[in-house]
Image 1 (cartoon, rainbow, N blue to C red):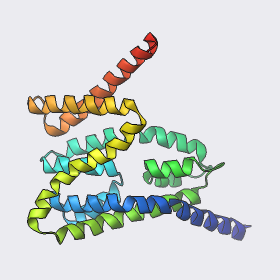
Image 2 (tube, one colour):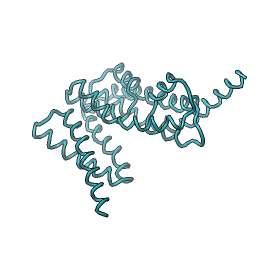
Image 3 (cartoon, rainbow, N blue to C red):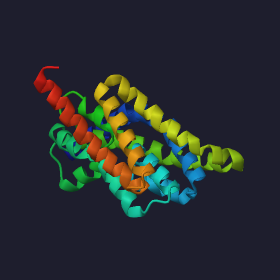
Image 4 (cartoon, one colour):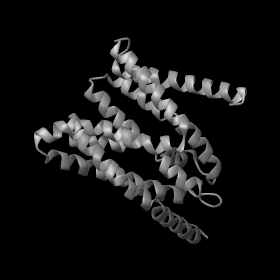
Length: 238
């Protein structure tokens, strides 16, 4: 009985690794770029790898680099990370309904590995998903992100100093690259990005708030404004 259960778990884990392979491949260029930009921002190899090990959240890590470059305090960076990843509360609750019953400890462990991509793979699987399958998906995705972050840093260290300095521009290009696919799928994202960008510019240029706090305020206020406007339009029949 136990041998059969162990064999089933191994099979599910291998299936998870196979299902997560596409995520691992997709993470490679993004993680490499993150590591390279982390080097140009001034992070050491250990700091870069440790951030990927402990945070494991692409958009938040990129935002953190821009805030570190701006000299923002650690508390603001942590709060920004919380705001950006607040959607994970809903994703975790949804995934909990999809997963087989298991101990709280194991749930907490695979909750750490939850990203937009791993959620999509696990949530769209037919029937209930096992813990072993989730671990397989998340482990290969996590390993790819962490390892390639370190490799990216090493590549960045070998670049000429003037090119490392110029690479700071690539950070903003990366944000645009991440935004465009979402904008194409939803006009709501376009309004959110436009409103948040405008508010952040106003707050920053006017000196009303520091860089980190202006991002937080712009994110929260723009979300409320866009939701209120869209709700009003729906009620009006537009």
